[in-house]
Amino acid sequence: MVEQSENVPLYIVMGTYLLLLLSVGIFAYRAKRVETTAVSASAAHFGGSYNPVFLILTTLASIYSGYTVTGIPAEAYRDGFTSLRWLPGALVIALAHLLFAPRLRRIAVERSYMSPNDFIKDRFRSPLLTLMCTVFMCVPQVFYSTAQFASFASTLSGLTLGAVDLWVARAMLGGIILLLELTGGMKSVVLSDVIQAFLMIAGFVLLPSFVMGYYGSFGSLGSEFCSNCFYVSTNLTAGECPATCEAGFAVADHCQLSGCLPQVPQLYDYPDWTKRCEMLFFIGGLLFFPLNPHMVQRIYIARNDQGFRLVLMVLFVMPFLAAMPGIITGIAKKTVEGKWPLSSQKSTAFAGMCVEIMRKGAFEYGVVSVLNCAALAAIMSTADSVILGVSSTVSFDVFRDILRPQATEKEIVRVGLMVSAIMVIASFVYGFYLVPADFGTFLTIQNGLLGQAAPAYLAGLWMNVSARSVTIGCSAGLSVFAIMFIYSKSVDDGVLVRYVPDIFWGLGANIIVLFGCHCISPDHDSGDDSNQRWGSRLTQPRIAELMEDTQEPSYWVVPVILIGIVLALPWWGASGDDMSAGAIDGIPEWAVFLMVMTGVLCALGVYGAWTWIPINVAKKGQSI
Image 1 (tube, rainbow, N blue to C red):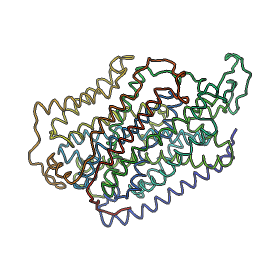
Image 2: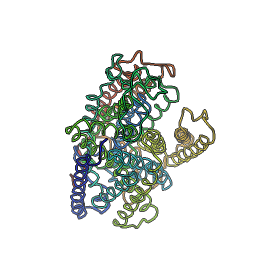
Image 3: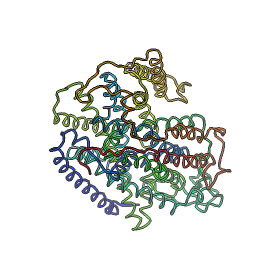
Image 4: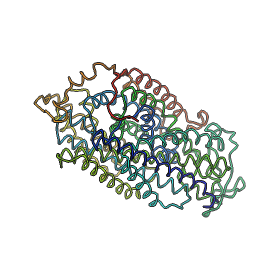
């Protein structure tokens, strides 16, 4: 058993990392004070202008988070190869940015947007619609932030063998986030993201290398000649390593075969229709990921359009690098953990695997210590970005624009800090009720709620539609969601929500009603809607004028990629069929097809991003 004294080097590495974050906070504080002399306090706190390298790293650190670090391994451990849904899911995140970002980015620069919801305010000039979109965009962030807190706590507690209680770990994360935001605002977030992204990418590369090096690849673990098979006793107490036992003993005698994929036969069961639909709607929900407030902020803070074009290209090559390490880790733990001590078996997939690799030697211990910091860094980077995004949206859209129009810059920043504190407290409390294996389910709900704002953005960017039509559509969507939510909780296994999540019924109603109202009464809100900040209302002709000098991406790739993803999912087999006989290098045929299709579609996405030729207009303001 690993004693706490043997974990001292790990604690030293973690302490060094925390000191590095403290240094970032001090530097960001000084940079923010300097910038405050040139721009408003709120712009210095919530905004900025960042070069392509920093922008790529902060975007990656904000997207790939606790869901990626602990959620994917935990889901792979529980569900096996259906966790491969994260590959097309990551692809859809990039695809959605290709759809939203080019126009939203150019408009934001020309109209000097600050709040993530400024486009809705400028385009529709409707306080009610703005408030509704604020709710749709901010409420899901409670789920998102809570997932980061739960992920951080489970990871830290597992790595320290329970020395750090879950509630203590959550309190530590909350304190670090508030300290960084208080000192440097967006600059603290971005600069810490840069460090965290480097660690995270190192973890993505090194972790699967260790796992496959010590335990084998899917091909070797799934082979009929797998040499890793062993019989172990399942009669364990805390701290014990399992004893080997002779082949032929019955399971009733606490002896079972372990160590190879065939010993986990459920991994090869063909997904049933419920699981297939879960995969589909999980992936579909990620189409709305760019509307998370912290992701809209990333679109705003690029130094120029070319910088965000590079971000898009990188996003299209990330799915395999970001998702596969967690999938490999989770399935490997499920396969080989029979020889592990009970403490490692009960740890999360990520934490348990790290602890076992650390036992292999001093070099492994040192490298995995850095990987542990990478895991914690990935979680922290997303948590602070999410909380800052919400505080920006609420302080501008609710406090300044509705509650106190005459608010000073310092008051706006102060309210933002208060909102951040409330988010930290809520995430701390809700973290008691969330476990990593449920992250995928919560992400589906989160993105389904976020999707209620998607019709407003898409219609606003591409159609000459009225605020009235969009508002009625949002109201209908919210109402239908509430009805279906009550139905799903009151009826066991109701057929209406067995395959289609209740939140997507609301989204469908939103879209249908919006377009119905637009067709019946195509009022384009053409009245005088002058605004002190932006002048006349942003209209569709004005958007077209702003995009005249930009060669927009080849948008035809969007439906092609979406259709390709749908066709790649496992629709074609019989539920529950054993697919082990036709496995390719230990991986079921349907899963191999999904992986190959995702790779091809990622390449098509890179082409789509490459066809975007933005105008060479740099964003004004201090750059980093």
